[in-house]
Image (cartoon, rainbow, N blue to C red):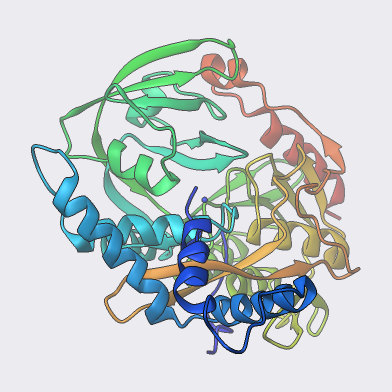
Length: 421
């Protein structure tokens, strides 16, 4: 399988196997009386014979293991007491979620048809949906608010990044995936959803009712900051999807035409996306053939991503990062720091050094799974450690809410002005 073109940098289950009872039954039915196993008198030979048989058992085909699903379904169909019943296919979908979840990797998940469609929409790089305007992700064993869209319903309701979800409409989210929670929160414009969360700031549980609205999120936005001393181009990248390279190129060229002498690249809240997109954006600032990142896999050869040298001029650049900058955005931030002398401002990034790919199955369900790791140009992997900024600036939420002052952005302006010749 060729996964090279769909590498993603962007969360309990049951492992199906042979139970102890199954082994006992197998021994009773297949070993006792088997002339190839001497079970009288010689314990060592008996153990050897059992090991041989159990080794054969361990190599059961997928079809033979699948039989266990059918056996369990028949038992439940005949004996499970319930007002309503679910189909075999519904139980299988739940089983597949759990089966993949058995890997205990929050980045490796099974998507049913609907979840796969939603995920592919997210990979486009811009969003248009009805909901509350919060970016949701997983941190450790919690599902949290990762970012809030300004002036969205969640922003007006007072939700904050790092708030942890506890209940949706009174239903506990325990055991649910990020996709499950997103599907519970999204809904038609004009309807309400009741959220119970744990406040990361106040350290207490609170409830809030949020009215859903239409949410439109551009993947790339830009501004020009002019002043007596310098003209600064600002580009914010929300995610790195299929449309991001084109959108970034348009914004970059517009700012150059408007006289930008340096750039601020804002990656705060950017949870990642497609690896080749990070490489393309880096190419606007890094000289041709310089290494952007190196990827290593279990089943594919190592791959080195080089800058395409798209820069028209070697503009100075400052990059804004925070604890929600992850994966592909971390690749971009570190590459710009290492290969283009960019200054990083903000707080330590998330620390996701793994790579995922999406494999679509014939029925349009899919598996998103970890296929490898990425490394910086100087051969570091930042998984679970993140990237420390050159200048740490904690975000002043009060100043932003009360006075609309983004203190991290202001620090970036000061820094880029000092770099512009």
